[in-house]
Length: 312
Image (cartoon, rainbow, N blue to C red; front, side, top):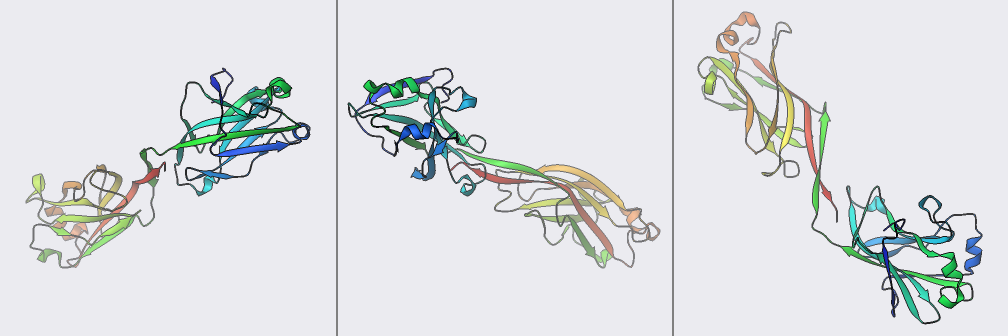
């Protein structure tokens, strides 16, 4: 809507603006003030708060010299949701007090303007020249009084979005699973209790005698995503870079492996079918199994978090 290139249309209409009028008396005093601009009071249209921003001597950094600049600004943006966007069709008005008509000024090529965090106002740097304003035959300035107006038609589009954040070293990123009487385990698979990292629920799956290519000769270990109603749904995914470890209880020579994976479905696990050879595990000199107790650990180094963006 910036009019440096003259991309605007003007028409004369017999009606007042639907949404807001900004009458200014003793306009000449406004021209002499030190402040570059003046704002109207806030007004509500389409569920949002707005204000008119008037530059009586023109917005200097937008080539507004010798003109009146007029903008529509969205207010109270701190009250809007993260990632807010508002799309609106805007029309500005100048009242012809002689003919009881309004000069309607709007974008010629772009019907809808997008307001967002980095662009909170739209308008015309050259709404009306001082020459046109001061020409008494136009009727825009009568008895040092002029009236401006605006119509705002907010588009309630269905646009949705998300914000993906990669969290390094998340809080509560460490989980330890102590298994007593390990040699007495008879089932094919055992699951740890659930643990939560950044709102995402997980558990470990252990195959004492192996799974897949590790069956019979290896201990197999996997991390499973259990999801969360706000974080992971069937059409979302979560990334994790994590370490799986069997603790060496004699020294620091742990059996540890690192992997990264995008978990795309709930109930899917990912890890190592051949994590630790059964013969090494059962060898008491290695320090993995002491007093028939095994410690399995998981540390999540990086995790992705997805939040909805709302454009209202």
